[in-house]
Image 1 (cartoon, rainbow, N blue to C red):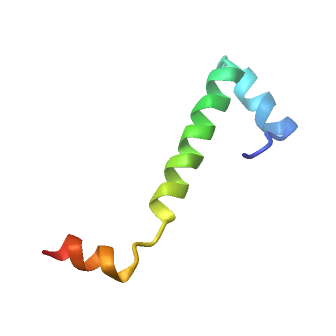
Image 2: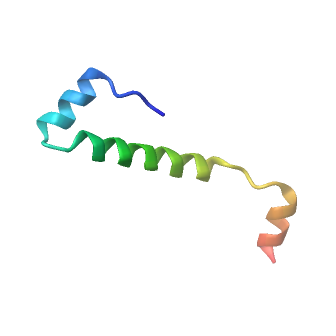
Image 3: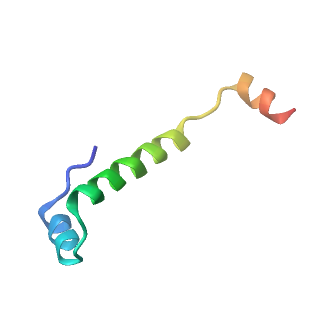
Length: 50
């Protein structure tokens, strides 16, 4: 999980964004990014290629 910097917190606040909603969105985005980075092993690649 990324810890928001003071600068990022100031930007979120200045834009009128709820910091808790922003944090939830950020965590979801990071989780989605981690899922897409998981490489498929050779067995799964062969099954997907059929």
